[in-house]
Amino acid sequence: MDKVLLVTGGSRGIGAATALLAAKRGYAVAVNYTSNSLAADEVVRAIRADGGTAITVQADVGDEAQVLAMFDKVDAKLGRLAALVNNAGIVDMQARVDEMSVERLERMMRINVIGSFVCAREAVRRMSTKHGGEGGVIVNLSSAAARLGSPGQYVDYAASKGAIESFTIGLAKEVADEGIRVNAVRPGLIDTEIHASGGMPDRAFQLAPTVPMKRTGSAQEVAQGIVWLLSDEASYVTGTSLDVTGGR
Ligand code: NAP
View 1 (cartoon, helix red, strand yellow):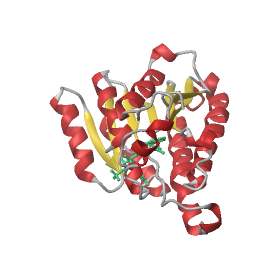
View 2 (cartoon, helix red, strand yellow):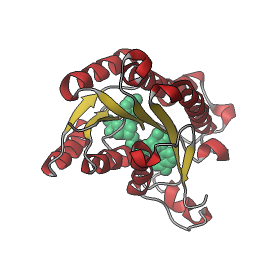
View 3 (tube, protein in one colour):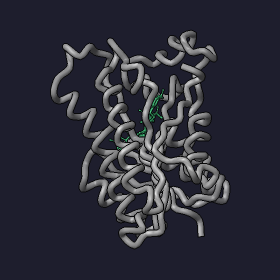
């Protein structure tokens, strides 16, 4: 039986690349999205056309009831969850901290931080040997912003990713002897639509000259790091963050 993987935000960008690559490596993939059903359907269509197994699962990871329904659907349609990629994440419009509203901050933390916590909680309840599970793997999406801080652009986003890194370290230690590995990937400037959603479609290309490798990264290059961390090749790796930043 194929190992079951849930990728949050699997409809586009890094999540879509991860879903496609993991399916090639034999995972049955649940492709989560929040609003872009056409994009999620396209990822599932491509996986099935290649002989793989995939379903779409709609849920806003910032809404607990929707997350619970999503996990129930994965249980019912694909079976025992073996892997989770906490990839869904947002940025907001470029702003300084002294311009940020509480509404903005709450939305940022609810989706990027609490969403990842609640999805990981549901995964641990299914994977942990303490709960009768058979173990599993979790990969969280951090960002180089966690250590760069993103001044003048989105310090709120950077701080949400800092929280993801502490979360990764703590959860990894909590479940290390329950058959679960937990790691993070820290992408740098990756060519996806997230920059347009923050009002700066050319951000990655504009900043590319500041990268030691002098180029942006692709979603596929990040997916390769994620899928390696999911795999048994990383069997002794837990509680760490992997930079995929071209040296930035
Ligand atoms: P993206 O191209 O903007 O895609 C975002 C994905 O997340 C989409 O599938 C979107 O679904 C989904 N999503 C957004 N809000 C959601 C919510 N509330 N609930 C469920 N799904 C939601 O993003 P990306 O660039 O691939 O980024 C993926 C992850 O990598 C994020 O955590 C991001 O912070 C991190 N990252 C990205 C970069 C970069 O340069 N691109 C760098 C560092 C870290 P819909 O299609 O339905 O909208």
